[in-house]
Length: 178
Picture (cartoon, rainbow, N blue to C red):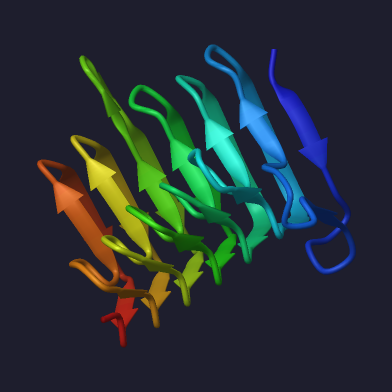
């Protein structure tokens, strides 16, 4: 079955890591839906996924705000190769990574490719060495009706950095990424 973690509204319920730890680890083989809440202030100083780490699992975020989290890779969210991650009506904002994927990092674990779908969501104000908003490796990515803005890097790919991916973008805006 699928585990459902449901709040009432992202503006009314917040889960905080108090700048001490990650809040969610979705173990391999799991299927989880998180909806209608805010996940903020997570920290993984020597690991990946400041707020959320999705293993080789299925994770859906619906109406979720992932804000002000820090990690080595995937400041907000890290998705392992083979993991399936979807964001709908969600916001990933103000997250930071010392390496790749300030907002989101989609990894690659041979022979498993990661999958990401972003729909009607905002990826804004995230920072990293590479891939301020999103960093992907050997992944399948679909972005629709979404906004990537004001993400920044000291390396490459302010909005997105991509390595050998299949990326499809429709009806989305990329603005002021640097």
